[in-house]
Image (cartoon, rainbow, N blue to C red):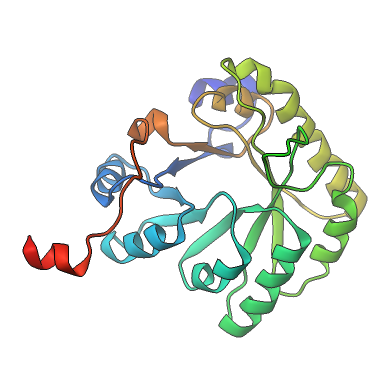
Length: 229
């Protein structure tokens, strides 16, 4: 990360690492925390809810990935600093509605489907403007920037056009709407260096830190399992 930031000509503190901890046990997060990593990304609501109370209060949390509208109220009850994957106007409106009940003020990134892949969620680059105008008018939800996941590729360099395109789209939207959109969440284990070179401010790295996920991942022990332990 430091080398990529230096190549991009930006200050060392202009990029932050989100350790993607979904499916990994709390013990792995504690080990990373002791090594100095404080920001973690979760995307499975029940797993996230189980981890929060058993980890130190200094842990910072981002919610990454797709958020189902029927899970919004649950996630808003958790200490989420930033939502990475707000992928529709309807979801943003649901966050606004429920946050009015709960008293929180969600900070969000709009997910852009940069390659128009049918398997992925997100706004299309050519149609995001109409939705952004309405989202910016909301009272409680704050749009901080954009997020994207490019098509999977064996070489990180293949993602460069998509990262550059997201940065250019962010710059255009910020200028057109007269707003600050400082956050670009792009780059994962295989391509984060290229993402940083193209302007990423948040990289989401999981397997390079924790190893590859296996099976269904971590789940909290059930009551019967705890009693028999």
